[in-house]
Length: 248
Image (cartoon, rainbow, N blue to C red; front, side):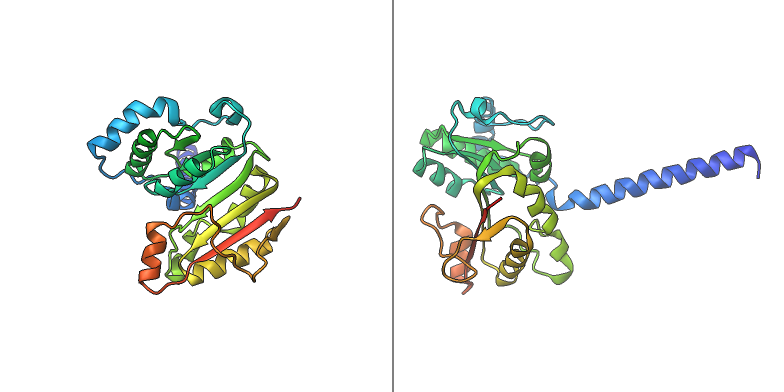
């Protein structure tokens, strides 16, 4: 083999390695690809007008929550707030707390901003980005009082279970972001996913189940009924809440 042939072989191997690395990376984040959708005029106007005061741009720099909200109130982080109606209701009901919502669906972000603006909500900020990256690069350790994940995509087919956001690695990455005494609160209307969530949370280190009525907790007063929950009731599904506290 000539030197030129060897170089070509080496370059080909290097290119293959790069492509393999890219493929693995794409597979890792596929569950969190942003879903743009079509904006209504109202949603786009809300983003144009309210993003400077209520939106948070993604950057690989930790958020200073005291500066972001102008106070030192406890911070609640919700991933996947949909159109934002329940998140806004929670923010209105708890002015003593600050809320940060992350959603990958652009029109949902616009709808949330529009409704929050009309309601005069001031203790809410939103992001339109991959929550996994936000957790890794922007959320300081021990800065959250509560982490909320309500009715995430259940990926109900067995071959798709690996795409579920609730996995041991995700919980392990979430744990240091919670303050001691902070709570992970999840809810789903898919029993199989509830069992999966419970298994993952039970296996996680430094957490305890706060439910006094078995593995699952009654819906807390602070979690509003969502359209997904109402749909679940109509379909005869149960709804399962899990609340686990970080103890160390």
